[in-house]
Length: 141
Image 1 (cartoon, one colour):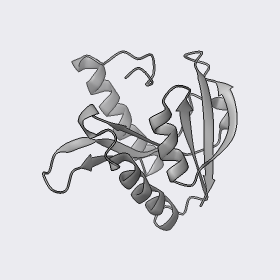
Image 2 (image 1 turned 180 degrees about the vertical axis):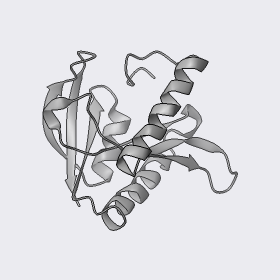
Image 3 (image 1 turned 90 degrees about the vertical axis):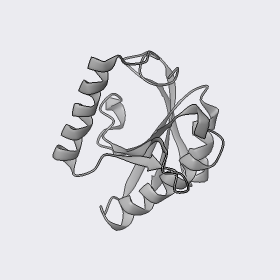
Image 4 (image 1 turned 30 degrees about the vertical axis):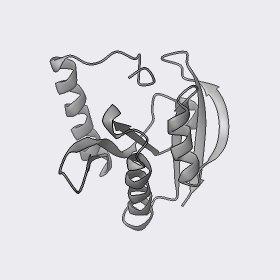
């Protein structure tokens, strides 16, 4: 969690609110986060999906692709495979023309996924709510 929001894990109440916010996002935009399941075992590995990155106003309007996996699934290609499916869905089913992804400097594994998706570095900036250095990657679909 060190690269997510302020790095803290969520308690049960905050988790419930976050889940409700994810549902509101789906209701408002018609897209959102998808569960990532390991086919062979049915295990929930995390999520990948699409969001509107209002936390970084300077790049708006935009749609962000992102992912978050449990540690046991890191380094296995799961994020890349899941994100590739979301990119294809964004292009073919949602008709999106462009996606961005926000790389918190230091999270090099996430940046590698962005590059594997064909994204290119667009800009470096600071995330206003956390003060963290971030890099914005983008891809035209």
